[in-house]
Length: 133
Image (cartoon, rainbow, N blue to C red; front, side, top):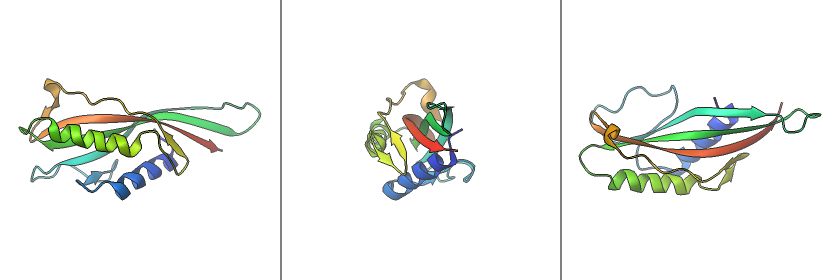
């Protein structure tokens, strides 16, 4: 799981610059909206920590932030694709609050994207974070 400072920084950046839909942070909000309205959800599925300088208590965390994009089903992929591009631009090659983000991957589009009232895809943003400890 990501360092708490990474979670705070990424959540804050998204809340500051994203106003197209509600944002669901990990373990804060419950299920999808009952009215079927679109949303994005933050996840921090993987990270790895290393100690690049052996004689100092300095660490580097590398990982990925997963941004789940849930839009109305049956409207094609234009909205999900546009949202993914906006979110990618928000995080592509940025540095904020000590977090360095890199180039996000592409979203996946296939038969598995349909889920109830939603078309769900995700964008993964790789990051690095240095900290002392």
